[in-house]
Image 1 (cartoon, rainbow, N blue to C red):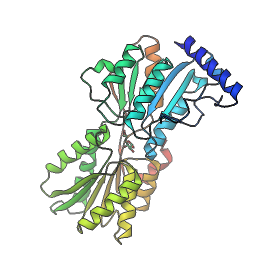
Image 2: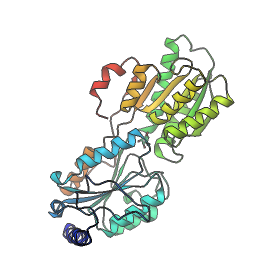
Image 3: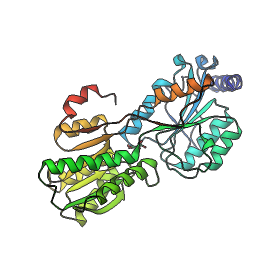
Image 4: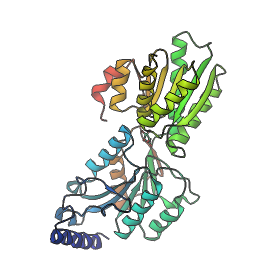
Length: 347
Ligand code: GZL
């Protein structure tokens, strides 16, 4: 495959040089290609990349959050020519049809591996069947897929989303007890991520399971904020108009929490005090928000999957078996440890 890909890449490079278009820069440094139909094809490779590198096609969800940016960076700094890789990166702008197009593009280029961060869990059987027929291993990073035939993917690396949801409410239970409010009725609203994404499904399941265990909690409403700050603020504004006694916001990622915090401040309430903010991801800006006293807690979901996936590929290259399901390590950070931990954060 590499020989064919090198030939194809060489032809693409030659064509690019002749017409003066197309980037000869290494894919790892090129601006992310998009699989939108009118977008330019995946960037041509540099001469270095023709030297029999392992070609990895990466179908990323989009660029919707700080977490996603860190996740993308982790791949773009790992899969570089000096490490023996050619990365063909695609940003699907949170559209499944774009990810499917990108996977077909990778198959046509006969890449050695496909890495997929599936925007939602369903709708993958056909295109992953095509990858399997082409003999290209598929590694899932971040979110999971719901398929009856699990030979459609080699393995999955990501966070334990149900446990993250449970840990968020466990933190809330302890916090309310410490505040002497464990016998008070507590009104909760939830900002969900993209509906149908594993992170949304798992965190919703984990949170609701724990809320149901405590009769003092009342989940007033839940609605998707699409994992974005803008939408998170919009939905929080609607919650604040509908309810004047919200005690807790559970935001399924930090960017929606940032939007919620802005909405709470805009109505003259104090986030972190009048309204408790429970969030997920634990990105750098979340630590700054906890230090400022706005966000109360962020449950970590480690995005640095690049090195882990490279380790998996190296094992596969040697014909070694790999674990089907591989969870990343994650902890809980709040206002008591945010300042101390911030200097150690890698994203
Ligand atoms: C979690 C990931 C989620 C993050 C969001 O693994 O899928 O998507 O929590 C991101 O920030 O947009």
